[in-house]
Length: 138
Image 1 (cartoon, rainbow, N blue to C red):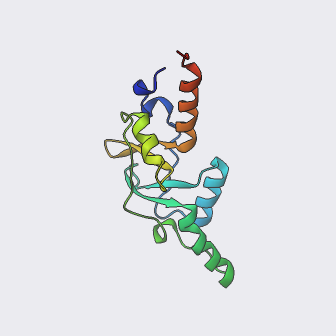
Image 2 (cartoon, rainbow, N blue to C red):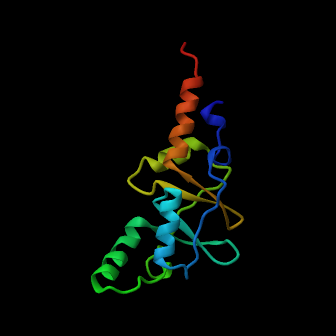
Protein backbone atom coordinates (compact mmCIF):
# COMPACT_ATOMS: atom_id res chain seq x y z
CA UNK A 1 0.00 0.00 0.00
CA UNK A 2 1.44 3.37 -0.92
CA UNK A 3 1.38 6.10 1.71
CA UNK A 4 -0.18 8.53 -0.75
CA UNK A 5 -3.24 6.31 -1.00
CA UNK A 6 -3.56 5.73 2.74
CA UNK A 7 -6.37 7.58 4.49
CA UNK A 8 -7.37 8.09 8.10
CA UNK A 9 -10.31 5.70 7.60
CA UNK A 10 -7.83 2.92 6.75
CA UNK A 11 -5.90 3.00 10.02
CA UNK A 12 -8.01 4.79 12.65
CA UNK A 13 -9.47 3.11 15.69
CA UNK A 14 -13.16 2.56 15.04
CA UNK A 15 -13.72 2.18 18.77
CA UNK A 16 -15.13 5.66 19.18
CA UNK A 17 -14.37 6.00 22.90
CA UNK A 18 -15.52 9.33 24.24
CA UNK A 19 -16.86 10.82 27.43
CA UNK A 20 -19.65 13.24 28.22
CA UNK A 21 -19.27 16.62 29.95
CA UNK A 22 -20.98 15.24 33.07
CA UNK A 23 -18.67 12.19 33.25
CA UNK A 24 -16.78 12.25 36.52
CA UNK A 25 -13.05 12.79 36.29
CA UNK A 26 -12.53 9.50 38.14
CA UNK A 27 -14.60 7.58 35.56
CA UNK A 28 -12.80 9.37 32.74
CA UNK A 29 -9.38 8.40 34.13
CA UNK A 30 -10.53 4.79 34.52
CA UNK A 31 -11.66 4.74 30.88
CA UNK A 32 -8.40 6.29 29.67
CA UNK A 33 -6.19 3.87 31.59
CA UNK A 34 -8.27 0.86 30.51
CA UNK A 35 -7.77 1.84 26.86
CA UNK A 36 -4.18 3.12 27.26
CA UNK A 37 -5.16 6.59 25.99
CA UNK A 38 -3.76 9.97 26.97
CA UNK A 39 -7.05 11.75 26.30
CA UNK A 40 -10.55 11.44 24.94
CA UNK A 41 -13.04 13.44 22.92
CA UNK A 42 -15.99 14.89 24.80
CA UNK A 43 -19.37 14.49 23.10
CA UNK A 44 -22.94 15.55 23.61
CA UNK A 45 -25.58 12.82 23.95
CA UNK A 46 -25.92 12.59 20.14
CA UNK A 47 -22.18 11.87 19.68
CA UNK A 48 -21.26 15.33 18.38
CA UNK A 49 -17.77 16.53 19.26
CA UNK A 50 -17.88 19.38 21.80
CA UNK A 51 -14.50 19.14 23.52
CA UNK A 52 -11.42 17.14 24.44
CA UNK A 53 -9.96 16.15 27.78
CA UNK A 54 -6.38 14.99 28.30
CA UNK A 55 -4.37 13.61 31.19
CA UNK A 56 -2.67 17.00 31.33
CA UNK A 57 -6.08 18.68 31.80
CA UNK A 58 -7.10 16.18 34.49
CA UNK A 59 -3.93 16.14 36.62
CA UNK A 60 -4.44 19.51 38.38
CA UNK A 61 -8.01 18.56 39.35
CA UNK A 62 -6.84 15.19 40.67
CA UNK A 63 -4.04 16.81 42.68
CA UNK A 64 -6.44 19.34 44.20
CA UNK A 65 -8.95 16.61 45.06
CA UNK A 66 -6.25 14.48 46.66
CA UNK A 67 -4.92 17.44 48.67
CA UNK A 68 -8.35 18.45 49.98
CA UNK A 69 -9.70 14.86 50.18
CA UNK A 70 -12.71 15.72 48.08
CA UNK A 71 -14.44 14.19 45.09
CA UNK A 72 -12.99 15.45 41.79
CA UNK A 73 -15.27 17.48 39.56
CA UNK A 74 -16.63 16.38 36.21
CA UNK A 75 -15.01 16.52 32.76
CA UNK A 76 -16.85 19.76 31.91
CA UNK A 77 -14.73 21.60 34.48
CA UNK A 78 -11.41 20.72 32.78
CA UNK A 79 -12.11 19.96 29.10
CA UNK A 80 -10.89 22.10 26.22
CA UNK A 81 -13.51 23.29 23.76
CA UNK A 82 -11.28 24.43 20.88
CA UNK A 83 -10.72 20.94 19.51
CA UNK A 84 -8.83 19.92 16.42
CA UNK A 85 -10.29 16.96 14.58
CA UNK A 86 -9.68 15.10 11.34
CA UNK A 87 -11.86 13.58 8.64
CA UNK A 88 -11.80 9.90 7.69
CA UNK A 89 -10.89 11.11 4.17
CA UNK A 90 -7.70 12.95 5.22
CA UNK A 91 -4.38 11.57 3.93
CA UNK A 92 -2.04 9.98 6.45
CA UNK A 93 0.92 12.13 5.36
CA UNK A 94 -1.03 15.27 6.32
CA UNK A 95 -1.87 13.79 9.71
CA UNK A 96 1.76 12.77 10.21
CA UNK A 97 2.82 16.37 9.52
CA UNK A 98 0.28 17.62 12.08
CA UNK A 99 1.53 15.10 14.64
CA UNK A 100 5.12 16.20 14.08
CA UNK A 101 4.25 19.44 15.87
CA UNK A 102 4.40 19.64 19.67
CA UNK A 103 0.67 18.94 20.16
CA UNK A 104 -1.68 17.13 19.74
CA UNK A 105 -0.70 13.52 19.22
CA UNK A 106 -4.26 12.20 19.00
CA UNK A 107 -7.23 13.44 17.02
CA UNK A 108 -10.92 12.61 17.09
CA UNK A 109 -12.12 11.44 13.69
CA UNK A 110 -15.33 13.27 12.87
CA UNK A 111 -17.82 12.78 10.06
CA UNK A 112 -20.88 15.01 9.77
CA UNK A 113 -20.10 16.41 13.22
CA UNK A 114 -20.17 13.02 14.95
CA UNK A 115 -17.23 11.19 16.46
CA UNK A 116 -16.59 7.97 14.55
CA UNK A 117 -13.15 7.07 15.89
CA UNK A 118 -9.73 8.22 17.02
CA UNK A 119 -6.36 8.34 15.33
CA UNK A 120 -3.16 8.43 17.35
CA UNK A 121 0.55 8.69 16.71
CA UNK A 122 0.71 4.94 17.17
CA UNK A 123 -1.70 4.36 14.27
CA UNK A 124 0.23 6.71 11.99
CA UNK A 125 3.73 5.43 12.82
CA UNK A 126 2.58 1.81 12.47
CA UNK A 127 1.08 2.56 9.02
CA UNK A 128 4.15 4.46 7.85
CA UNK A 129 6.43 1.65 9.02
CA UNK A 130 4.32 -0.97 7.22
CA UNK A 131 4.43 1.16 4.08
CA UNK A 132 8.21 1.50 4.36
CA UNK A 133 8.65 -2.26 4.81
CA UNK A 134 6.57 -2.92 1.69
CA UNK A 135 8.68 -0.58 -0.42
CA UNK A 136 11.15 -2.23 -2.73
CA UNK A 137 14.59 -0.56 -2.81
CA UNK A 138 15.56 0.69 -6.24
